[in-house]
Each structure stands twice: as structure tokens, then as C-alpha cells.
Length: 192
Image 1 (spheres, rainbow, N blue to C red):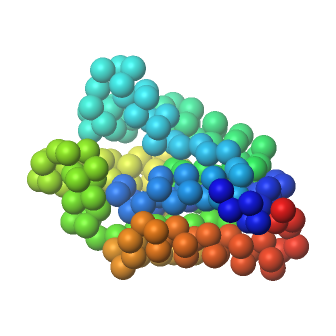
Image 2 (spheres, rainbow, N blue to C red; image 1 turned 90 degrees about the vertical axis):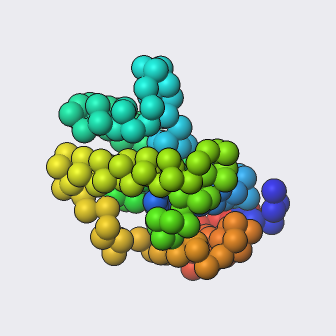
């Protein structure tokens, strides 16, 4: 951990983005660097799917019909943002936690790049991941539009929007870390 970086009191960072764009990698790195808690809506969603013995695609279809699943995840996310000292990694963190977030970051990359990253990470066939990711994102787009009126393609509310296709993980983390440090320096929030 970069000890000179922080113990940023009350800092809340919301990281949103497309699957495979690097949100988890960046969120975990920022949490460690700035001594913040790490909360992942994706882990909660995957755990709920696993508990039901379902694939992510199948569970996404169930969630389309049951807004209580997303509401449960989003309520917890919002409570954690309100508490502070946290990095929230969630597909819609920027929208859900915006009220409490000091800094919002959105990561994206082309579908093919993201699917290849996921396939490599999970040692699964690329075509399978490509189809699963596309299905999952279409489902989420429709759900969030219907349930919350959120257009997940509208990134105007984010403080930093970054195409991670252009950067490896180390560079992406470096850029996001620099953004947090710049925010802390300009906001007057303590950084140590």
C-alpha cells in the first residue's frame, strides 16, 4: 500500500463499467492504495446465483422478472456508500451511489476485447463468453431502464470515463489513482 496516499476519511469512490473492462481490478487496487473498504455488487449477484444453483445468464433472466433481487443489491450498495471509506464496484454504482460518492469512475472497452479478457481469466471458450456477456449486458440494460429509469449507456454523470482497451491493468490503475489523488488535493479532503 502507498502509505503516503491515504487514509482518506469519508472518501467514497463509485466505479462502474462494462463486464471485463477492469472495474474489479481498479476498485480493489484503489481500496488497497487508499485504505478503503471494498464492496462488489457483482460478487453479491454471483453469490445469489450460486446459492440458487444457476448460471449468471439464467439468474439474469430471473432478475429481469424480479426487481427485488436488484433492489436488495442496490440498497446494500447505497448503505455502504453512505457509511463512506469505501470503493464500490458495481455495474450501476455511479447511479446508485452518486448521492454519496466523492468520485465516480466509468471503465469501458469494446465487447470483443472484454470477452477475450474474461475468457482468458476464466479459462473458458471465447465464443461462450462473448454470447454470455452480450446476453447479460442486454438483460441488465433492460432491467435498469425499466426498474430505475437508468440508461447505462449515458456516462455524463461520471467524473472520469476511461477506455481500458488503450491501457494495460497497471496503467489503468495508475490513471485512476492519479485521479483520486488529484480529487483529494483539490477537495481539501485529508489524504493521510
